[in-house]
Length: 410
Image 1 (cartoon, helix red, strand yellow):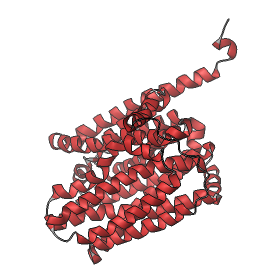
Image 2 (cartoon, rainbow, N blue to C red; image 1 turned 135 degrees about the vertical axis):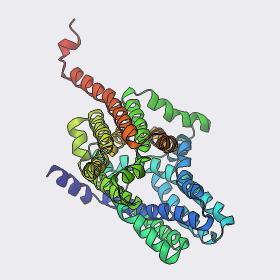
Image 3 (spheres, rainbow, N blue to C red; image 1 turned 180 degrees about the vertical axis):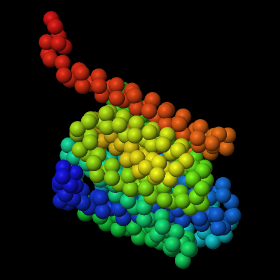
């Protein structure tokens, strides 16, 4: 009931409703293009390696997140979101020229710009949401945003693949461009009072480093972001065993789609309960519970049976987003406005870059050992990652429970 009331309250807010609609629209186009781009490259070149590089091209700009996030602290974020959406809408038609192996480079260039713009927009969205939504509702908003984003991933890739099969890559690019135009229009309807961005306070490198220094100087935030990065690394390691797990179950490789769908349903569900969960447990305990659940799910996936595999997928979908939602909400609540863009982008870099590294390392490890050995190790490492967060939460609870006389016997 509490969750339902929270969602209804959020949807009654005009700004929240319009912003979430923009997330759904643009997320649908992005997820459609994400899958179609790899298929497109595979069809043109016949190379599995080049097709896999599409994902890397989208993720690579995240490495420059702290520098890109500085843009959000120098420009009005509503203007930045509108400009970014319209810019991508104008850029995507260039993909109509990708019709031969020699022009695949153009697709990669567009994907890199796409990823860089997304990094800037993520930082700008964090600043804008903090201005539009009260601090007490940030957890609910971030959770609902997660639910909608994951929900799009359940339907958009299939739509993109079907459209690609019927009309080709340019049609998917056109669809994505239309979604960005619609998202820009929805962002233009937002009624948010933004403070005037602070002027340049020094060299760009110095300003970029301020976000890093801020996170480093806040032990609570640093612990959440570090745990988020470790969790994403271990989760990506475990994801590389998925085809081997399906093979042990005796299914065709296409069965991975079933496991991904079950995990997506879990991610949608956790987004709806994250707000109440954060209020009841606090950020560190909520994140620790999610990481521990993910660890147990990873270990359960080692059991060669359908029921544990499906249950593990749902549990992983429920647990994995918890630390990401907790960390982002904590950064938004505790970071001063003039630093929020840089702090958000830095946190995103630290949490999501290990995902790429984990995919590369895990692909090598799965060739050396089977999932029966690897998954329990990954699961135990996740449980170990949850322990410091739980200890920090317990320590904070004991400190808060102490009376003034206990704190100062004199």
